[in-house]
Length: 262
Image (cartoon, rainbow, N blue to C red; front, side, top):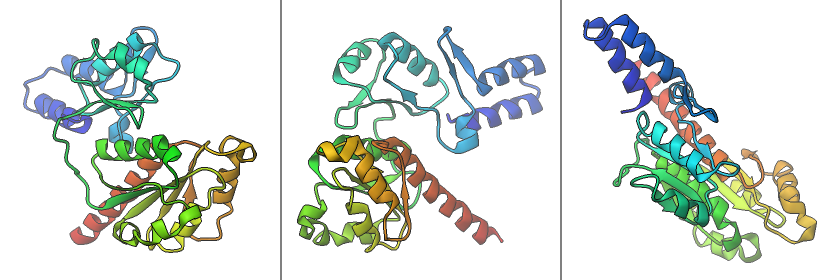
């Protein structure tokens, strides 16, 4: 049951006289935020406010802390995600969290229904320049899929062999939003945006030789793109790109529904 469904169910129970005001007040305290030990406070209302639940940032947390947060969140969220989880941390988490799934390329651990299906219309196309960019690209892809969006992947089609991209123009044509992930000089999002009629979210990666300055060079290239309709997220931020793409699609659906109701 999602957080908004929990809130609706609680309010209906109060209205029907099945739950007292005191019990409802106690429940609402934990719907707002919920402490986990003395090290975390889970933002249970984030889904209601933003459309996306809180996600656990893995680095800097112990396996025990991550496990406790995940077990608390699973009581109120159908999908619980932890990002930037390396294999050693997953191995420590596995005996602590039942039904935990690991997406190694994306470095994501998740508790999710086994047959998770897309819930929203539209397709998020995700394109990577090189194989070395895959951890960031897969982070975006898995985040989008776990958030209920349909994803189409296209890997290793960077500008050094542009014919690889041009022979897969259907991925660009079929996408409702595009996420383009590139390191080195970061030229790929500009090329894609020149072919696309949908928003393009550019993700610079820290992949590249010394003069790429750990992703700063592709970041600046993307910010200076001569193609229109390109938005840029931070270096290696596949997660943020996926959430932005999802918000674009959800806003489009909200506008469509409002138009059909008027």
